[in-house]
View 1: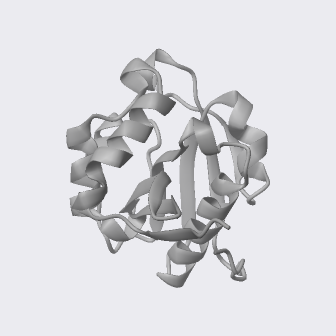
View 2: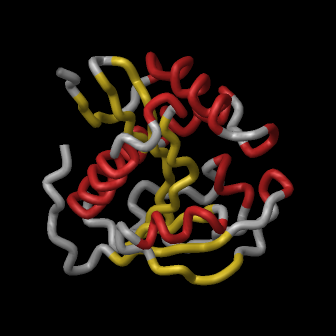
Length: 172
């Protein structure tokens, strides 16, 4: 029987997180190892990993801010990050291809949403590809429209989730 656990990332998780990022995102869409390390060091409480039998199989990383600008590429470097910010901007949601379609993204997202709500955050924002809009809508995210971001030379869609009046999901 598999044991699935969600926890905060540490620097020891860097190599595995980079490996998952590299196999999951194409070319310039993937974050560099240096960016991932900076995100772990700068905002570990906003960087969660999901493990299956103690092997990291996916992660979510984010930053906090008082002013959300989803098309701002500098925020991916955590320029403008303020841990006291009431809004969260997700930069990556990724599960290793071998574990996709097994409910791992759902467990990770629910745990992340609960963790941010418990930290007193009021909203979560992200940008995603068109084919993922419906998936994020299942977690309560609202589609805000197309983004001005051209990250990785692709077109993106902005989404937001209000954490006000959300009850815990009891995710594992």
